[in-house]
Length: 158
Image 1 (cartoon, helix red, strand yellow):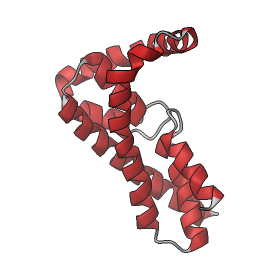
Image 2 (cartoon, helix red, strand yellow):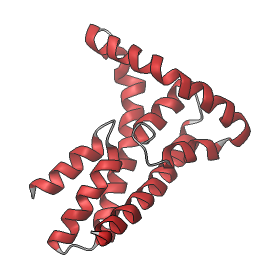
Image 3 (cartoon, helix red, strand yellow):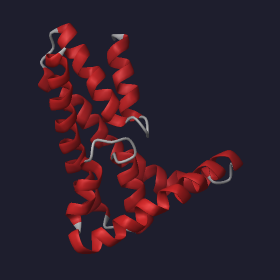
């Protein structure tokens, strides 16, 4: 396996970078190796969507175990404290926009608004799990398309 695609996978799985960093690396790899871009795009987006199930599993079943570790507990509490402002804003929007608010939140291709944050947001607010998985998945696809077109446009510009 090529180091560049492995790097793209790792970036896609990481909480901060996700497909926002992994997809451009994968697209460059795709172009270099003459692999159809749609194939690489589908792989990275699917990987990010599958990550949603892992995140919810972790939050539901493993999070309470990790809270016993002082370092994890301190980091988690610090993150949630900073994240609380986004949660408050989201709750206000969610009441009026509903499902669409979660889709749009995840679809914004900025660090801190991807599948990891969408899952944490859904989990903290106690949203319906099936609807959340669907909304986060749609958001990931939209963000992926933004990043795909942005990366291709940037590469064509160069």
